[in-house]
Length: 283
Image (cartoon, rainbow, N blue to C red):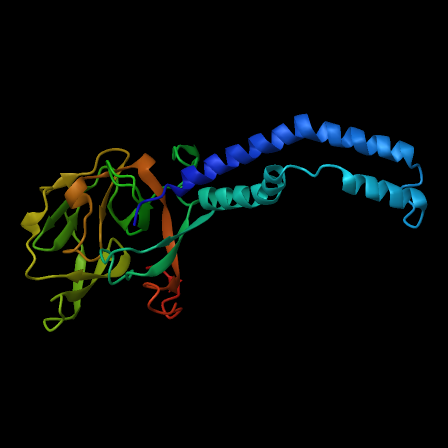
């Protein structure tokens, strides 16, 4: 599916709508008001609903040329567009999970909600922070733009600025401290041959998949890695099936979109029915 820059589209629609609204207010509305004032002078009893003046006034107004259709539509749609723009830019934004890189935490087809307030208020399109409200914490599930890519990605925050990250033999070490991993289910019969583990990421417990036969050597990033100032190291919970900071590097602070906090629906495609069995907060 072709990527659509929805924030940019909403901003353009808002600017066009405001321009039409101002054009109508400055150039078209004064003439309408002048005609209405003349009619009220001509029919002084226009407020009395059963009077002849009221009937004549109403008929005269109905006979005037209506507002251009594009002005009428703008007056109806502009408040809706502005509401959606403000909601998506500063409060909460919905996303659908397109890949398996965050399994088992998030499945393909999960519809999630992203908090746009936790990591600072940012302008749409430019993503410039205008109000600092907080910073990503280790273990957060975050939506962002990876380096040199304009698509939304979602991964887990592993490394904060200044952290030293090491990942060898599928075991994660942060600042010299090995992160606990407890095997829950050995899935040798699973088609993907993945094992299920519970990882304790500096106090944030969540489940991950590990694929024993997959080699860590295929990732271009070489460990240990120190996280640069103003950057974050991201990894998927499906550790051996994720394009993340091991592939394209660290995520700059100005690429952050928001914190994923809840699943509100699951719907894979049109061949299936929506399900609400996975509704809940994201661990």
